[in-house]
Amino acid sequence: MPYVFVRESIFKWWVVVQGLNHPEVRQLCEKVQEQPEYQNDRDKKAEFSVPSWMVLNGLEIMGFKVISCGAYSTGDQRHDQRDFVWTLHKNKDDWENTTNRRK
Image (cartoon, rainbow, N blue to C red; front, side, top):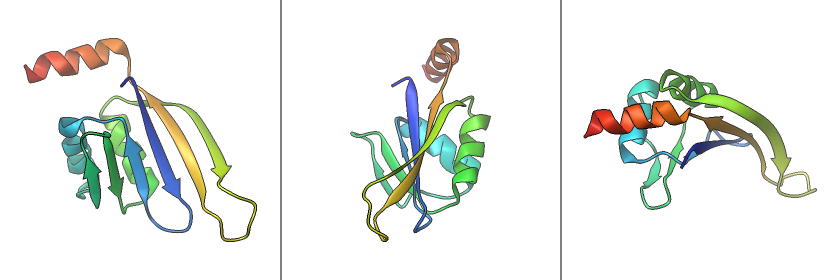
């Protein structure tokens, strides 16, 4: 998956990262110095209970770049969930170099 989505809940310190494979999640764990609270390799999803800036800094060190940022709400009521979404992109050459190094 060439894109990685990072979602942060404003009501709790949960940051969801979707689109990383297992070795990349392990590398991100090293960067943020925290293990994910939840991880599903099949869906390429990991949830961390750290501030979003730590996750974004870790992804930047790994070579990802933010290409869009937006906020959306799940409803109009006062206590509905509201998330902030960052979409990150890694260049094709970077993906290929990372894949070739692991072989």
